[in-house]
Amino acid sequence: MKFYPTIGLETHAELMTESKLFCGCPNEFGGSENNHCCIGCSGFPGALPELNKKALELIIRAGFALDCEISRFTKWERKNYFYPDLPAAYQTSQMERPVCVGGGLEININGENKFKRLNRIHLEEDAGKLTHEGNKSYADYNRTGVPLIEIVTEPDFHSSEEVVAYVEKLRRILQFADICDGKMEQGSLRCDVNISLAPENSDKLGTRTEIKNLNSIKAIGRAVEAEITRQTEILESGGKIVQQTLKYNDLTGEITPMREKADAFDYRYMIDPDIKPVVLTEEELDEFRSRLPELPQARFERYKSYGISENDVKTLLSEKVISDFFDNAVKTYDSPKSIANFIVVELLGRVNRGEADMEKLPFSASDFAELQKYVDEGKVNRDIRKDILRDMLETGKTAVQICDEKNLWIKEDTGAVEAVIDKILAANPKAVEQYRNGEVKVFGFLMGQASKELKGSAAPATVKNILEGKLKNA
Ligand code: ADP
Ligand code: MG
Ligand code: ZN
Image 1 (cartoon, rainbow, N blue to C red):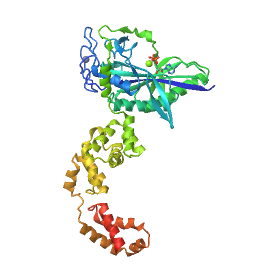
Image 2 (image 1 turned 180 degrees about the vertical axis):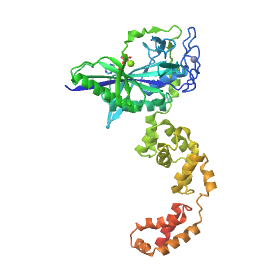
Image 3 (image 1 turned 90 degrees about the horizontal axis):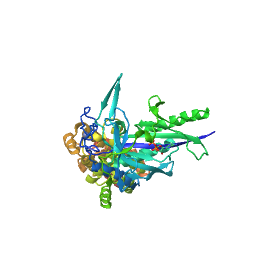
Image 4 (image 1 turned 90 degrees about the vertical axis):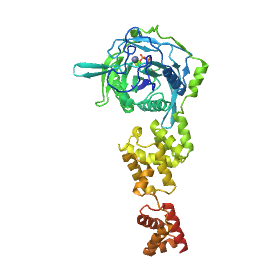
């Protein structure tokens, strides 16, 4: 019998707010342990929670970006469970009235568009972090109470490719809308995948398992593959799938049980008497909508309209820092095509080789744009663009400083250029003859000889003009 996989995803995204969801503690990654905590987020009884308005705006922003319906009335419940990462022994979450309902997004698989539906997005608190060393465990509550949204899909996915395409697109939307930084390696975006298999023509879904806390897109793809294989083998040998929560080890590819799956009633959801439900007005929603940043799709169209190739557009949009850098560079020097080329070919080349970090560049987008402007204006030779960029990265100096110090400005001494070209033509009578007989390809050879002799001291356009003139008129 053939089995057909079905997958649903729960994605947790930490919101980019300054403070936590119900207290004023900073929402910051890292820092020394248990340093971003107060009696509120440490679970002391009696501390009064106050909802962070910015977090509410950001989940609604996610709702706009993902075409959800926004609940005009929304409320929170306590989700009770005992675990050392949760000092209050309950997590403030949403059950009955999540902020966002429905919605979805379209992914593209081999040229085919597929719409994947969302079930809901709700706003809850993150839990703390546990680390284990030998037989000791340590709890760090810096993350406890950080605002988290959970984006739940319908069981609409049927392959790891679809899942990966969805997470990539979702991550980019959250990042570009300034909702979540999308740093999966720091845990600010994490996915749980629910997987089941059913006989190919069955109209019922099979028993599902859930793999928790996958924190890279590659790991998500591999975990889905591994679990489909594991379940297929069990079913084909006549076994049954047990509904449970699993752990995936991306180094070994191994899947192991974590715990038996809790049903909703185990959490004893109850109203939180300290947190008022929120009633949203149309004015507030309009205000939030007016602050929605430009989304990746809109940037994609805009970049294409500049005449940048689709591949380069995709590269520029692969991370928000790159796209923002590009936009800022174009503000200084309005030549999107040449800026895009400079970023993709030179800057990202260095980033990929580990020689530069987009998040910590020692120069501004504006300094970067100036260098390209000098190249395009013929003030600096294109061939040394990459060397100047390297110096900028290494020294933090501007292009102007470097060109001044190293004497790299093109000297437009046309008399000197003419003298060099005369010399080259005299030394290569055969090539000159060939050119005049219509073999125009020797032009490149003569150009090369001239450039070699001039060592970047003249703009290529100038050399070309003079050389052409002399060949035609001599
Ligand atoms: P819980 O909160 O207990 O994990 P939900 O009903 O909220 O359960 O579902 C969680 C996710 O599991 C959703 O993304 C949903 O689409 C998916 N899901 C539910 N049933 C199945 C199934 N049989 N196979 C695959 N995915 C499923
Ligand atoms: Mg779940
Ligand atoms: Zn606090």
